Amino acid sequence: MSMLLLIDAGNTRVKWALLPLAGMAERPLGDWSSSGHALHAEVPSLVQAWRGRGISRVLASNVAGAAMRERLQAAVDEANKGGPPTPVAWFSSRARLAGVVNRYRNPAQLGCDRFASAIGAHALYPDEPLVVATCGTATTVDAVTADGAFLGGMILPGLGLMASSLARNTAQLPEVAEHLADDQPFADHTDAAIVSGCLAAQAGAIERGVKAHQQMAGGRPVRCLLSGGAATLIQPHLAVPATRVDNLVLIGLQAVARDDKPC
Image (spheres, rainbow, N blue to C red):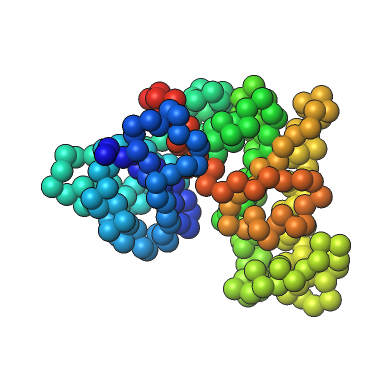
């Protein structure tokens, strides 16, 4: 069976998913035969997960630089060793793709992961105005209109970067964050005070994005989608409802592949 390999190479991890090419147009978004992730240093281990899977098409989003691009192509080549070459199609932002219009001043400048996430979000929730908040190494808060226009967004340091900039032990961040009550913003010791301030900044940016987009949408309710590694820590502190959707980049890549347009 011929398989499609989707890859999301982020700043910290590489996520991937496999699904059959046959019947892809009818397959629900996020319904994959298998999936996984690896830290950057663990990329060579992906060869074992991909070997013998009949990969005949690869679509990848990469924001981790040229070296990662080379390592991923090498991993695909090694996984398919002995079979026909399978070049990786590198996803990039453009003016229009898979039902989303990119209104960035320079469409190509938009991070390909943000564009893929916007495509995935619009594909999952068509006809709804959306705020897509991805909480990873950086936090991005992007607005997509109900008819599929990517308006732009915000970029700020992620939760871990914010905490580390204040020179505290970020290894304890998840433990401290999980014990902070969302109705008690004023912490009584320094580590918790730093985490509380960082959580407030993250939540405040997302809430501001939702409010601004709702005003632009004429008061129509805006769905907030939350993804990324720090989403679990941030969500309890949000004053707006949020729908958790993991792997939005991979979902966006699946939507692009399903749309069968050049990427």
